Image (cartoon, rainbow, N blue to C red):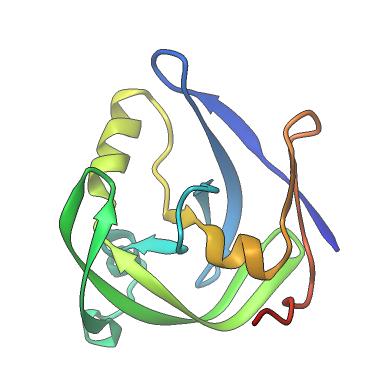
Length: 147
């Protein structure tokens, strides 16, 4: 089990987001930990800025729901190495979306941009435990054998 610290950022009003430090393509970044998100997704523009060629994004016919729309084009990308603290996963196929609206809102609130959203696929597969009092996320090192 790996215990990973996170931070809670207050949003305007009564809301908050849980942010977690990650490393992707050898670059440190932040992600939103979102138990309501079914899939982990990464921001297309940030990946392009990291030097990932657009040709490596696999087109899908799936339009993503959530993030205020149901008409957002999604892509698939195999991530060779993804690290959260000492926890890591290799060769993970994930969704790629345009998260510019989230990053624009963060910019207006003086919050650093995010590279993506850590969603239920990883949280479930690695048996996540979230401790809000200790501000920590615990993940198994090996995936569960789910049916």
